[in-house]
Image: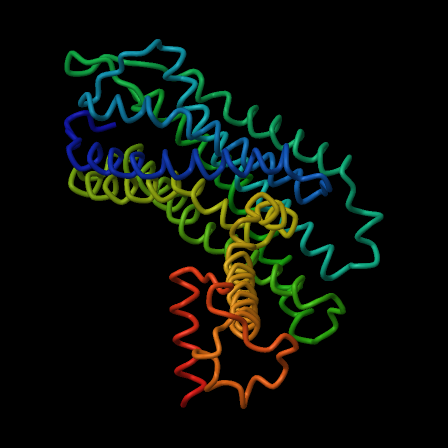
Length: 377
């Protein structure tokens, strides 16, 4: 490998600082809220809920490592934490990346069964099978990502480095692991997703889908969000990583390697942002999650009705007060003030009362004057 190529770190560190500063608060907060809703506010759990819960756990776990990455890049590439934690941060990135891919694939298969095989849905899809599938995904991805635990910190330019391969042996190991990850973590799942969504779209176009419009809409939302996540987050990263590793191992021109590194940095930032897309999937494609959110925010639903009922009560109160004042005016007005209204007010059982028996407040007298002027008009 060409050791004379000195890669510029300014662009890489700036891109990572900006990306992680945005991804951390959004990804951590949104996925933590989703995890709380799934675990504590969702009474009716389903196989979809199981997969979405595990997806949220994966995103929260990865988000918790981002502050330490930010410290590293703000320190100019100086790792101030233990060596084992550097290994764990690298390991967690790949675990999050590939568990996200496989959990999204599982959700796509569930949607395929619900749409294309609706009569077999209840017999094929169960909570137990979903839980076992998620457990198998965790074990499978953890085993494939274990080699990344072998690469820890290294010394370069009098700084303790992390997230950077230190020698030729590390680059060659990553080169081999790359193809394993691309095959099992992207190519195969992506083809499965394309087949599932192709069958779903054909079913919807032919009009053979007998479910409600709401279920149709959720299927469309899932297709849009999952395909967008794959095309924007996962596809560019795997292509850029493969090309860059080829250039490094085959010792290409330094300018070519530096350009490919910049492309890889941008694609890695996009891959890290996949944790911000998943909450959109929970809300738009998960009926149970959306209902739980609405139940937890009743004030949003009842605020307008609260104002409307308040207006109705205020209107009824004003009408009642007006009727009460009218009654008082009719029964307790001196003859001098009520004489002009006697044509309208024909029901006066007690007739006109003396002025010393009519003690009205200032506001009542103003109302009397107003009513009197209306009578005159």
